[in-house]
Length: 397
Image 1 (tube, rainbow, N blue to C red):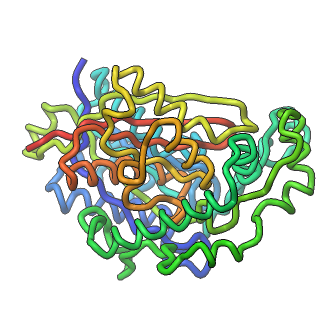
Image 2 (cartoon, rainbow, N blue to C red; image 1 turned 180 degrees about the vertical axis):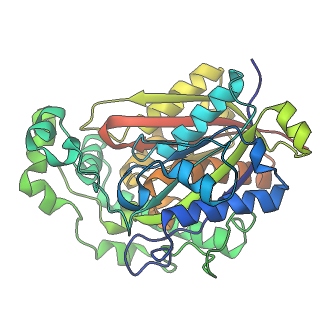
């Protein structure tokens, strides 16, 4: 058994997931090729040495279809000998790509590989793959497949988080993101795209007053039948209180991210320093109606697997799958604002489904280096009650 290390990390800025967004004119394939070229330029890597490329993506149709991982390495000129595979664990796909790749390095199947994710929501809309979990009423009913926003409001109701508490979290994450961008915390890793170099969704000046003026985002969806599905699984709740708005929900985004991973031997051959060790990962699942608690349970599992406690972790990068789930995470793991999403999260900067987990892993490493920390965890909750967590240990020079 060998250790798996992260050698480098790059990402695009996150653009609004709409036709008016700054990344809409950039195909997801082009975004991956851009980052693959950036890895080569930054590291001096001979891409022919890369033994596999694993890309997370949650809607593998249209511009994201036909194994975009393999297509991207062909267009990047990495040679015919570099394989590629595209994986789908919904919103946790990018984190899962990193976890799978690290596991293969630890097992000796790979020495040097690339993992990451991509999503262009503006070009390939959410649910565009038309799978039965989204489109077949019988499957939706039998599986308990509610919309993520309904699951978020169900969790808020169960945990008793108020609209004011949830709004306060939304204000906090925006302020953190504004500060982090202003202080240049993301400059090392963000690769500009056609002059676009900043996460587009950050909203400076967000206040409790501006968020209080927003209507509940999912009350209409709940009234259309989604609340009934959720309450059939959880009748003890009685009534779902719709407390999330667009200001406390993850904003849809377009983005891509890549990490270069390898063994110690590969690092030495390349002359590249290692930045972090991938200690362990965990994949969990839970009730598909409650759904969004699985990211937290994955964190709890990976910590137990490594013999660590929440107090040992310097940085938690937890995908902001709605404000209430972040409040629950903070309450249960004692992860205060200085350790959990210290530079803002997906509510502020955007959620690019397949790319988000990879962004969080890389962002966690950047922040560990910035604060001279040791351990970090990146985790994502995904549709159908899935969760993935990746535990990292910074390697000091």
